[in-house]
Length: 100
Image 1: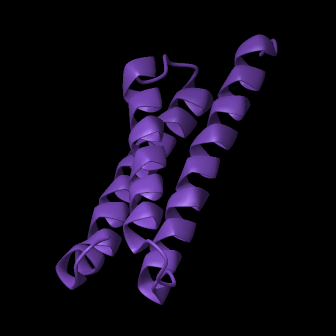
Image 2: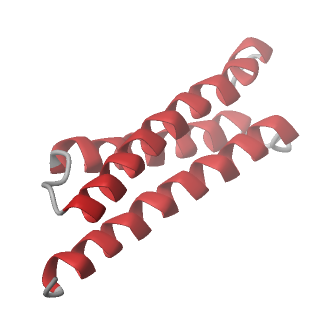
C-alpha cells in the first residue's frame, strides 16, 4: 500500500501520461487530415501500454482504501485520453482506405 507522498504523486504521474497521449492524438489527427504517416507504432502502443500500467498501479496502490477524488479524476482523464487515441486511430484507418 502507498504512502501519503505516493498518493500525492499519482495525479501528477497520471497527468504526464495524459499529456503524452494528447500529443500522440494530435499527431494522429494531423496525419489523418494530411494523409501523412502515423507516428511510430512503438510510440503509440508504448504510450497506451504505459497509460494502462499507470492506471493499474494507481488503483493497486490504494489497496483497500477508497480511491481519492483527485486520483479518480486523473484516472478518468487518462481513460478519456486513451479513448481519444483509439478513436483517432480508427479515423486514420478509415480515411486511409477511403479513396480521396
